[in-house]
Amino acid sequence: MVGLAPGPGINIQNVKYYFFCIDSKGSGAFIPLFLSDRPVDNKNIKLILAYDGTKYHGWQRQKKDITIQGIIEDMIQKMTGEQVKLISSGRTDAGVHAVNQVCNFITGSNLDPETIKKGLNSLLPDDILIKKAACMPLEFHSRYCAKSKIYNYRILNSKAPDIFRRNYLWHIRVPLKKNKMAKCLPIILGRHDFTSFKSSGSGNTDPVRSVIRAEFHSLEDGLFSFHIEADGFLRHMVRNIVGTLVEVGLGKMDVNRFKEVFDSKNRCLAGKMAPPQGLFLLNVQY
Image (tube, rainbow, N blue to C red; front, side):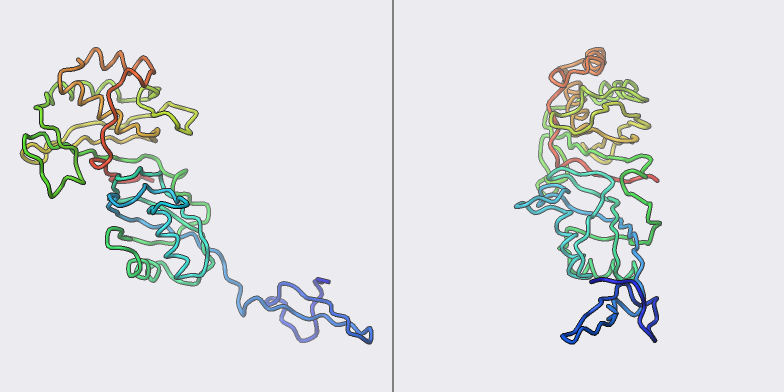
């Protein structure tokens, strides 16, 4: 039987439960169960990490496939002995990369953030890097506390591919009319229904999102990037936007048609989804 009465000479602050035991003669006594010398408070650890998504089946843990979340959770368990749930700012798909992904987990470990950072980096493969670790208030949530996220998509528009960067960009041989692609960007700025750029199977019931910024940047000969910042993203939203912008750049669609597709709220009318390897999660704003 479990009781709550303290025994004589026992510091109640170090005891959570007492067991009342009765021996063969009928005598009873409260036996204290010591959980620890000092109570350990839970901590909320925030991680900022970078990863090359080439070898992984996305962020979310899966039963059979190797994922970013699965590997990090396994390494945290090795360090702390705890099975933790790693919460990210958002899931990335297979082959998608991150420069500053944010995640957090609750732990009862007495390890400080810097020790956790160094320990994880010693255990993780070389395509995942913990850049920062910090202790946050318990109510901090990597996804729900985020104000906006910034993605970057890279395209190499040249006849010859770059074999050394093929896992980090979309190579398009046919010349793109980037000026026409740029004229489409004001259309998606602001708060809109992005159903036309939402892939099927999305768990998002509300397709309305606010795009804060959308712009192209020339990086070097033939290489340019598409930057987009929004308060949230639907499944494959960035890749579907990029794929449709490329249709405009190829002359298969003009700016007016792009607006018609956007307003139609019909995914079937938009362009094909851009491949994953050109997409990077750049930053999460709080």
